[in-house]
Length: 169
Ligand code: CMP
View (cartoon, rainbow, N blue to C red):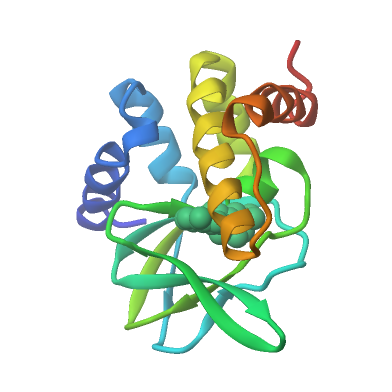
């Protein structure tokens, strides 16, 4: 990757809240491992139910998080610059929970399992903050499906599932 582009990617990744605790070396490692993809409006980035072993950061643009209810797309959330998605399947090994569709032309940065595993090994606290985000997102999905859940009760299960998936103690 060229220097200017990589600088912009480092800057983007350092502005992502879950990556805030990382050292500049770790952020640079993530930037090197990231691959950039551009999607046109209406294009699908992630399809619900597919397997997934990477997560994404929105570099520029906007995507919608969609569920299909009776064959119709229902928007659960909208994510823009600096937001991330795809962490659920990556960290739990479960299928993609929702579809992600570009609302406008959108550039995303894809980060794979190996790079995230290295980050986790050096930052075990990150597992806990991610588990809270995943629990919140699951609740919003459940609310959209009109099923209720408890964020607190779910966190412990998510933490162990993330640790198991990455072979951590
Ligand atoms: P994953 O299940 O891998 O693929 C679909 C992604 O949609 C999921 O990871 C989350 O990153 C994202 N997602 C699911 N629910 C929500 C939500 N309520 N708010 C924001 N993003 C969500």
